[in-house]
Structure formats: structure tokens, C-alpha cells
Length: 114
Length: 113
Image (cartoon, rainbow over all chains, first blue to last red; front, side, top):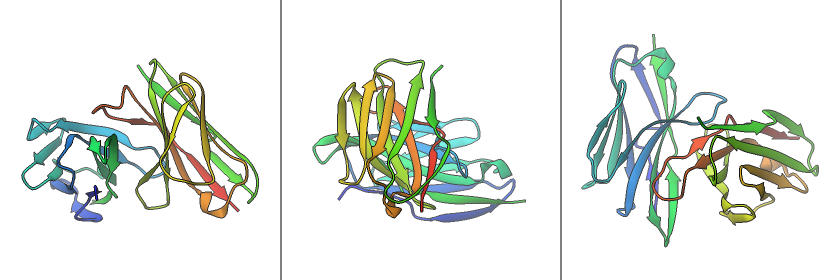
């Protein structure tokens, strides 16, 4: 069935290094993807999005890559900082099982070591 | 700019008691509204969504219900709480259903004892 999953549930990186968080999706009809950041005890916050007609989009220190051929989405964080420690969720939007839906992945916890 | 509010922030309730969580959105009209539950260390489970006043769609059968009495107000309720209702409840809004991001409130942490 449809799913948005993450390859690595936990990721630990050294401060200053680049982080890459991966996400796999199974619904080829999904046409819009989002990354969220959730800090402990808070609601998820929108980070960056990408539409299916693009394969790369850059924000401030973050880049999202979309590979539709293998249904893979990644979030790259440059020069990771302690404040980047959080759980990161990917989400896909599209017509799924006959209706328009948003499906969230299980999340990856990012630890930044000082 | 748009803002979304949830209250209370934290709630401890005994099993069998009623529940009412409120969510309001400011700065937009006709938003789509969503209720999610998040268990500790887990992902988001969509409970209800609404595309307009009085219009509620339920994603999973459960002990909870939702209502939308006003355009920018979304309420999550229960007549009798269960232990399994404990969790972090998140309200979200989006400008529409089609390919647009959802924006989340601060959440309500519910502990049922």
C-alpha cells in the first residue's frame, strides 16, 4: 500500500558536518513533498517543499532532492548545528487510494554532537 | 500572517472523563483543518480533517469525535477517555487540500490516568 518511510530512524552527526536524511515513498501519483522539523514538545515546523516537476530545491542551509525514478526524497543540512537536533518528517501529497491525501513518514531523529 | 493556537498545552485526565481540545486559526479564511495524534517517539496519525464548517471526515474509528462550529475553530472531543487516548494532539491547517503544506499548532499533551 501507500507509504512514506525513512531509511534511518536515528542519525548522529558531528557539529559542522553535513547531514543527509533520507525518505522513500511508494505512491508514484504523489506530486508534492514536504520536510518538517519537530523539536521536543513542539509541533512540526515546515522546512522546505518540492514539487514533482523539480529534482532539487535549496533553502537556507537546506536542500531537498527528489528522485522520482526510485521514489526517493532526501534532506541535506549543511554545516549542521546543535539547534538542528530534532525529528525530521517527510510527507507526500497526492491522489492516494482514490482521494487526495497527505502521508507522513515515521520520522528520523537527528542528534548533533558538539 | 497566519497563526494557529491550541489549548490547553497540557492536560491530565482520569479514565472515563470527557475531553475537549480546542484549535483556532487566525489570519486566513476557509482553511482546511486537521487533528493528528502522535504517540511518544512515533509518527503522526491523522484522526480527522475538515474542509468547511460542519464538515468532518474521520480517518480512523476511535473513541474521539471532532466538530467545526466556526470557520476557524476545530474541536476534538471524547465522552469517555481511555488510557490509550494518551498522546500528543496536534492541530494543523492548510489553504486547501491540493498539494499545499500543512502548518501545525503547538500541540496538547494529554495524559489519561
